[in-house]
Image 1 (cartoon, rainbow, N blue to C red):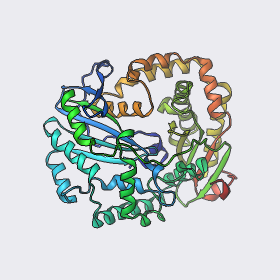
Image 2 (cartoon, rainbow, N blue to C red):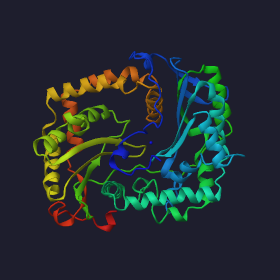
Image 3 (cartoon, rainbow, N blue to C red):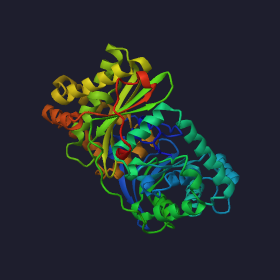
Image 4 (cartoon, one colour):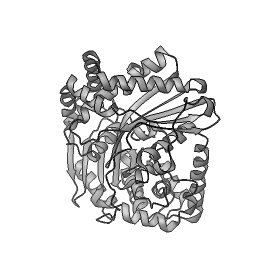
Length: 456
């Protein structure tokens, strides 16, 4: 959740599970009541929920670093590593490695996010020993065979070529360039057509050596395994990694201040509009107020203001959304929509007006009450599988939240006042928007202001 950002929606979203895990018990207190802070005999820590409802185990884990650790002239190294770690390790070539995964129905995957190198492991309880051993081999002895590297490199390059004609990908890429300039967040996590061909096996091995280490490791496990057994598995799997990572420091950065607008001409029937600006970091005391008011503006799906104004009232787009994105060193709000080329200017104007109205007036008390009710009620529904719960517990650790955050969250939501929400709205949207329009130049958006090269 690669977690490389190829669209605005993928930027804002945490990883989607590839394997559907049987739901946990339907009791909404299940997850909150049983989260344990496990420390293995070797000192490896994990948040753990023991659940014997079904004989399955889901583990999510992350190492600090991610795409920010790619060399400045070679973005995409972490993404290529993530795509190759399961292509053979130790004495197993790629074919044999995948056959062992398939034979035991083990799902193993890796991804390079902005700030983290992440992984997922899912298995039946009876296959846990082999599953954890295959993960150990992937992390500690990847082969990076030439044939596998070139095959995966070709796949990545093919995807990058497709993105050159994908308006959503182009808009997201340009948006990040405008927002962050030459900061690592402004680079493409999945690389470029220029950088990926230059990545050598030595770059891949150097990335593994620097990034995959125990001191930045966060782990979440949910499933049918006892604490003692899990502790032993964690030691065997991760204990052979280096004790400390050798990460390149990354500076804090604030996104470029709005308003700015850029146009990328592309002859496609539908124009894509990506918009956003500086956001609120997860550790900010006012984060929850921003989260709630953002739900009202654009995060609430069919109930959001932007959906009503742009889709329902004017019929300008099929869908529109807007999300908060927080990172270790910055934060954004970012939204996206698609519209007919001849109505792009009208669509941008409608979005800008509604964002300005929210900044000036804030939400109503009714909107605030309804948003809080939804956000409280949907929390446990979003954690109804072992996979989802493990992903959430990992994210809470990465966000430096307390282990009992699930229990506290509804009270934090409830504490948001109308005044808090209005101040958050002014803070988020009072400056206007960074806007990127990808579409046919004559109709794209009236007279968009091109962003000069120096601003990129």
